[in-house]
Image 1 (cartoon, rainbow, N blue to C red):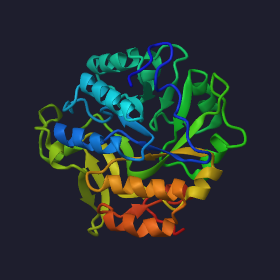
Image 2 (tube, rainbow, N blue to C red):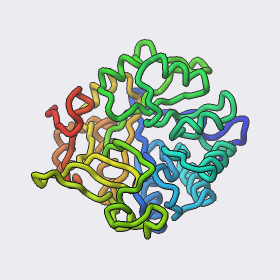
Image 3 (cartoon, rainbow, N blue to C red):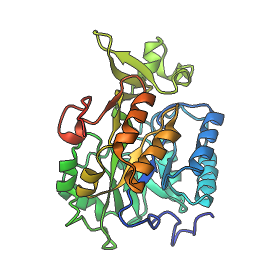
Image 4 (cartoon, rainbow, N blue to C red):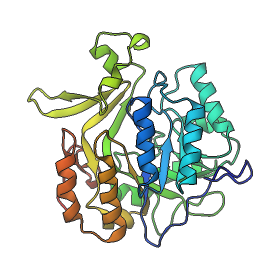
Amino acid sequence: MTGRGAESPQNMTAPDSLPGRLALTVSAVQYHWPRQVMLDFYDEMAESPADTIVLGEAVCFRRRELKLSDWLALARDLATAGKEVVLVTRTLIESEADLRTVRRLTEQHEFLIEAGDASALQLLPDKTPFVLGPHLNIYNRAALAEHAALGATRWVAPAELSLSMLALINPPDDPVPTITGAAMQTEAFAFGRLPLAISARCFTARHHRLNKDECEFRCLDYPDGLLLSSSEGLPFLVLNGTQTQSAAQHCLISDATALRAAGVSRLRLSPCAQRFGEALDWFDRVMNQGVPATQALPALQAMSLPGGLSNGYAHNRPGMNWTDP
């Protein structure tokens, strides 16, 4: 099933979901994976419980394992498998060539766009439905309402916001209305290494004493990023090219009740190179099938990356902290 044309794109409205269901979104892959690894991953995601798949390169302009034509072909395949597909624009635009890529994405009418930065807002056709990416720095209701007036239908909240703040910005009993009158959807970052910062400088290249434009694509050597440890030898941060991430994987598997109370209707899970499908299955079982989180948490802790699990930001604490349910 491909898109329905410019007048009624296939992805402009979220798919019907069960009452009370927390829809699961697989974010764009943040790392530089080889082409075949990427294709195999999305074959797996087509058979997964994910409701929505976000496609595209969001981190670095030099990562070109897949071109726009490849992303669109993947999107059509995933749509045929019953997934909602969203195409993401880059978080940091550095050149006219980058803007041309954003323009090409915004000119297609098959799939919903996730605006990675404000340049995409300028290029989207007027009143076109779109997703607000987590790096657009929307931290209050007025800002959310302003973007809703531009056509935004879904807000991917910044990962550092607590659940109590989400409830204040887009409360479940008084949600921000979109231009169609529907309620603005809130999507919370629920699993994966937190994307903390983006820079024009490539830290992975610098680590290897290489120039950014002659990086030798060293990110391919680090399918889950390059781990940095503190002076005490503890996992601290991860370098992922121009992106800095947390070492710990943010995990809200124990917060289903609090998420719903905050008005969250969608959960975002960020892929990792190992056993991500298992993590996605656990989230579906806990959030939507009634399996106790106490069953899932030990399994997720056992498969976590170096740095373990954290949920501090969601509970008004330092992000690397863990709050027991």
